[in-house]
Image (cartoon, rainbow over all chains, first blue to last red; front, side, top):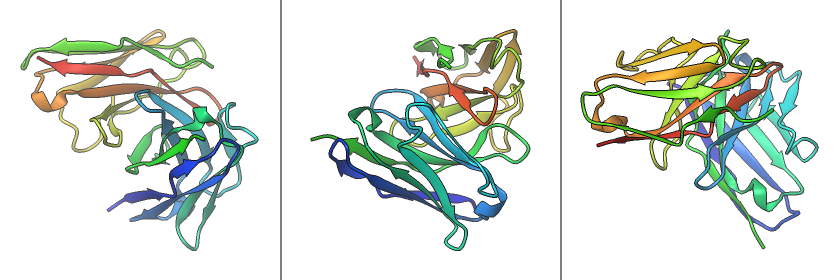
Length: 119
Length: 110
């Protein structure tokens, strides 16, 4: 069955970097676009970034563009989010989510990993 | 692009029906039939409940339904059950590969 397992969250100082991972099983990342969605403590969901199924294009919300990079390793079937120049407002639970085939919704979600940006 | 607008809370008694609304603009909900709804229990990941405005994934009870009129989408939950108490988020395709979420609605089952 489809499973997404995030890891790599933790506490980091403002201006620091962190790399999140999302290990996929039950399907191949080569066949699906993937997203990162975040949720600040007590707040709503916010779409962060998307990578196309073939890795050819990436898209970012304005607030992270130039600081975050989405990528994937086909051999490991793992999605990544490299986060640089972190700010306090990046504090959130980060979820990876699979893009539906032929649709525009998220059909599977991971359990999330918490990133805290604090001095 | 601004987030979609949802009421902060809604409540109903077991067996009743409730409607959760989500208002966007002519750049998202008003022009695309790609509205989805997600249920989130505390401390858990979101779960897809409705996609493409009114389609239900396998396994989601038919008590959950969706509709759209103009720039506003709605999630209707009939025959409320205690386990339906959760936060609900709408989401719309907004062009390119971007998605917009609503701020979330907390459903309380009285």
